[in-house]
Length: 241
Image (cartoon, rainbow, N blue to C red; front, side, top):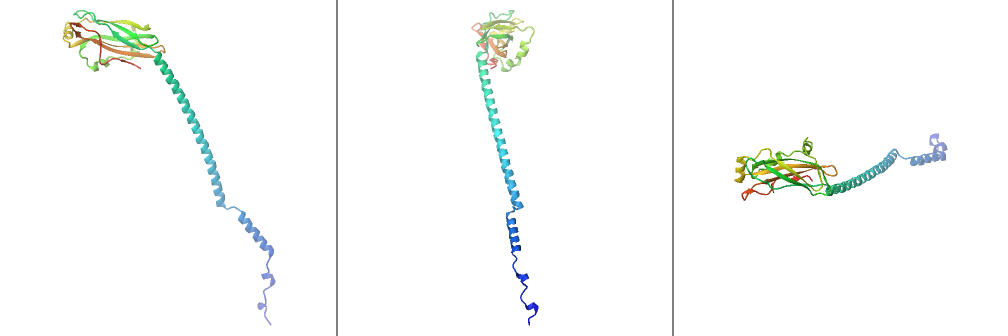
């Protein structure tokens, strides 16, 4: 007789349980369908990157539109400014100064110079005035002497006794030196070591009420036994733009 331990296993221990098998299969299928934590984070990062890209793209597009609009506005303003400046340059007054001969070089006689102030522009000159001086100085004149006595138009036009000329094409101005010719001056001029100089600045307003100026320097030297015609100095002549 065989013992119980030698007998075949109990059918309950080795029999296949269909219910348990189905439950395990269901769990495996559910587990396979559930996303992992890593895949969820990756998907979220991708979505955020897309949103940021679209946001950056809209920002850059807005900046581009703003820059293009600003450049167009600046260009339009610049073109308008150029047109206005060109019109003002074409219409404004332009002043030049010329002078006649000095009547006589003689000891005891005050130097006297009559000048013509011409307007070569298309519109009149307003509130013109000048500062000028007649003197006997060495010939030729050193360049640094010319620039020392130039004054700003604000000072010239605000002088209590400053004339206020209004003219279309020309006006005339006279200049006397307070001190008459001295014997030493006459001698230096006749030896061509000195000359008579007229130096100054004309300040004026144009039709647009803008301030302008013209600097002038001319001299008379001894020629053929007399003072010659006026000659413009190599320096000291010019005007603003």
